[in-house]
Amino acid sequence: MLKKMKAAMFVEPKKIEIQKVNIPEISDDEVLIKVKYCGICGTDVHIYNGEYSRDQLPLIAGHEFSGIVEKVGSKVKRFKGGERVTADVNLSCGTCYYCRHDQPLMCSEMRQLGIHMNGAFAEYVKVPQDKVYVLPENIDFKGAALLEPISCVVRAAKKHNLKFAESVAIIGDGAIALMHLQMAKILGAAPIILIGLDENRMKKAKKLGADYVIKSNSNMYEKVKALTEGRGADLVIESVGLKITNEQSFGLVRPGGRIMPFGIASDDCVVGYKPLDMVLKELTMISTVAGAKNDLADAITLVQYNKFKLDDYKTTIMPLEKISDAFNVLKTDSNVLKVLIKIDNE
Ligand SMILES: [Zn+2]
Ligand SMILES: [Zn+2]
Image 1 (cartoon, rainbow, N blue to C red):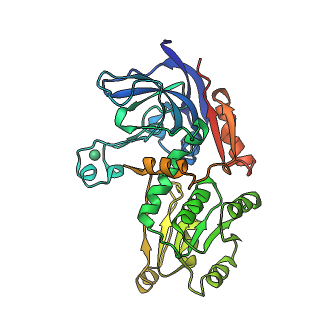
Image 2: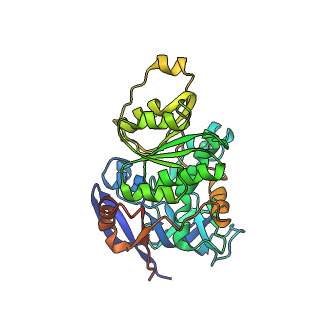
Image 3: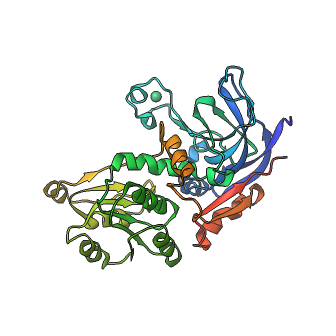
């Protein structure tokens, strides 16, 4: 086996170099995965722009990936090599207060592959064996690169606890907003209202099962009220990450309802709210940061049994060498929901 591999090194903000670097050395309980596809996530865009995880550069980013087990450590029992896999990228210590209380994402030692340590925009990535999940036969490598974001939406759903016949307003028309939409459909929510800006993506939302698709503007509050018998939505999911969209949540939720800020906002984004409204309306805010524990396995099950459909997530595939260009495609073509980087292993 070669000792060196191709990797996209995020050297400094807005600068990625394709470098030849050492293939990661695995320890006894780790697995080396030959990467097939790795999706570009909003988080990667923030890393690329220098807005997130900047202190970790230079870094091989990439955390939404699929591949084949290439090599296993001496204590690995679950894998032999050759398995088609994806991985949970959230590595927590397993023993601290938070890990013991089922909140591994709060672990002070928590490190995420591709964010705090080298990830999968490379020919190989190493992962602890207990974080590796086998793919069912009917999920291909491309689809599998979408499982990590779905796992984030799975965890969100476990926390916002949307029930059948409850109304939901989803603010946003990006890939993740459309995943929240599919999840709401799985849960039997009604009506499902998506609030967006882009015509192409709003059409897609309709196709994916939104009961109503509304253009984001000053009339949307009245429209959502009209669609919910004058109340407002039982649950509002903010899936953009801007000050304005977070403020809109308060105008869309019904008294007694719940608000989930989900989109990753910039570090300096501060949103005002009226405590009196919060108290008088008994509003609840809920948030989640990623998938954890069994969320990835649940995401796999939902896709495996076609509850969660991936066919409509139009992806653009680009080679590793073109990764810098890939960051622009998402901005310029609203038909593209996701860019996947294809890793051609040598
Ligand atoms: Zn991601
Ligand atoms: Zn811990």
